[in-house]
Image 1 (cartoon, rainbow, N blue to C red):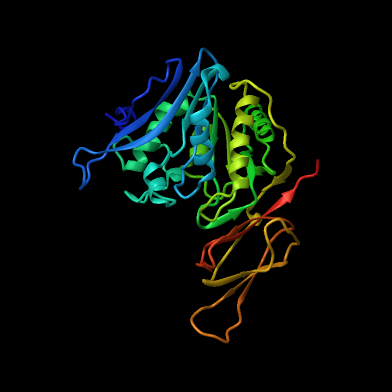
Image 2 (cartoon, rainbow, N blue to C red):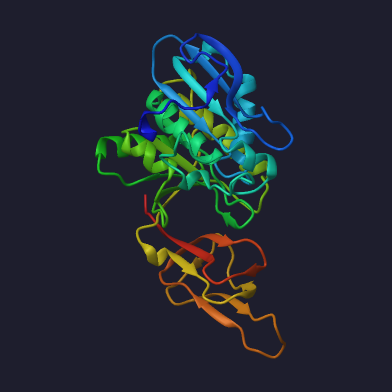
Length: 335
């Protein structure tokens, strides 16, 4: 029997086909030192009302990103079947072990959930969770919203995003939902490390996929949490799954068309930024200095951006290592 034919070890304590509201868990057996017959218990809520499309809403794909979990724990408390046509599956902490630890990757196996797809039913804990999403949850979905922010190592201008994909009908639907979400910025997004991503798994199945980057620094502000809460409901309404009227918000469209958007450190040390998020920068402009920390009196290394545009994301901690992404510059799209 191949891996892809093995049943998932994860079981749901809810009935995905039953009408009403159900709060339960995805239970993954996990034998460990403090619980020989223990389990990883991933909370979820299913709200269903008759026939209609399904939205799969996820946060905590990376465990140190908090706007999504805040919005989804809030939605799970308030969403009622009377508001829904179809089904909403809410999973605030997709990679629960990472979320509980406050880390990007799982403390159990160091697995990065967003690089683990399609997963394996007999793999690591992270791979087993990815496999369940790949083979059970994603096939149910019509629309997927996966919340992200910068975590402890990046900070972003708050944006909602979708990808350029070969299926232009699907792409148009995704960008319509990005527009409806109503983040301060909306992005046509380029991924610099797309292998094994949840995004790709969903899009390869023909699902309309929308994501976010809503801040960073390993916390959530009142402003970014409110963007997530309002935007999630706006998206569900625009998708025809939740009744009501959207709350339109002004948004500036951005584009990340190629690798020149990204500036990487080639040296480690203490970073001094020379521009702030939201600044407009010019190609070749110094964006940061990196001071070597081993001795005084040495000149810093200057980092220059490779394109003109809006300073959209930056490295967050004060120290950098070689290979760290230091700055992201996006094109400002007129209209």
